[in-house]
Image (cartoon, rainbow, N blue to C red; front, side, top):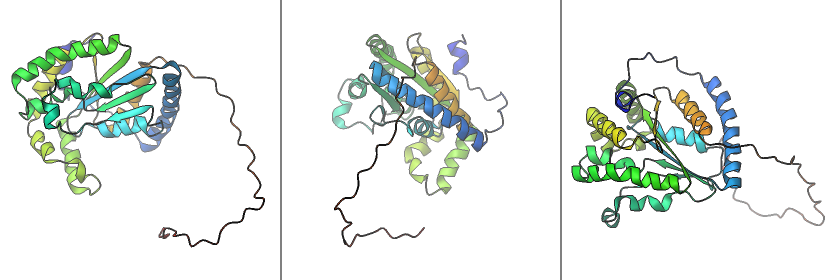
Length: 274
């Protein structure tokens, strides 16, 4: 096993493979989507409780990866949690309290787009909490996660590692693209300049919370297509599931119109501009 210290270092020296072509990506993603549907049916059948945590720097590809996982499955089974900034009441609670109600029940896969690890990352780097609060969190997190695992929750934690050059390219693209400008908040701009503060925070987080019962899995994310395929493949490999038998589906015959006639109603049709 690679040591925590070695894993925590930025690894940008390894030459990146050629970017995956769209056609190859879509072919593989379609196959993985079929497997995710099989997993979904198994989770429901067995009453499994699955919790998936995504963390990483701004622009690392968390949102796109989560979308790739969830776009062909039921939102009633695969539930995405992306909590806003805490309210004043939530700030007065025990830190983990606002996250616990979102933990999965039987037959659910809950995906956290950022999680309780906000305290170890953005809150620490941006000065939203004290160092004493961070230290308490780093001691508390493994205890909470041990309780989760002991209760039967399958917990998977992913850190998406993006290079500084690729992060810059992606954030600059958000500035120029009207479809993505909403992804670039004032907080993102402040965070961008603090690359090594985030590196130190990540290293401390790994050292304290990379446990045998809830390890961190690190995925390189400079190629978003490869990242998504790698994450989905890894997720499927770490949840034991089987394909459930399914009867062949045939559409029944549609009833005859009988006395029904389409009404002469002035429908307000959408203008067909395309």
